Length: 79
Image (cartoon, rainbow, N blue to C red; front, side, top):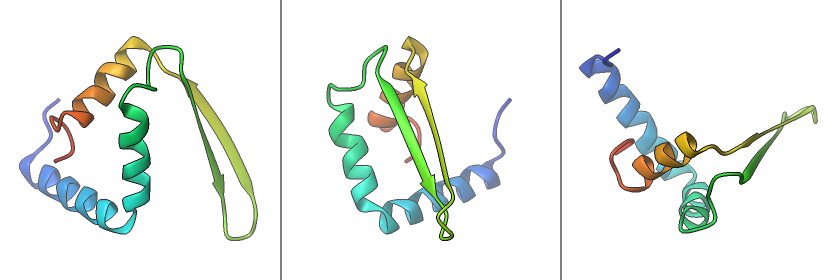
């Protein structure tokens, strides 16, 4: 399913804002994507609300996940 052009522009704008507001997050992702992300790697995410409630989840990367990360890394998605 193709994304409509307006939605693509909105997504690009949101990604730009995220990059500006969270440069350390993107630097971290860039650093681990330069070799550490490979099939079988586990990525864990922990979310803590302002009230202190925590939620944790993880994924074990597949070959397909690596291909998707490489698209981001090479600028084919998210620019």
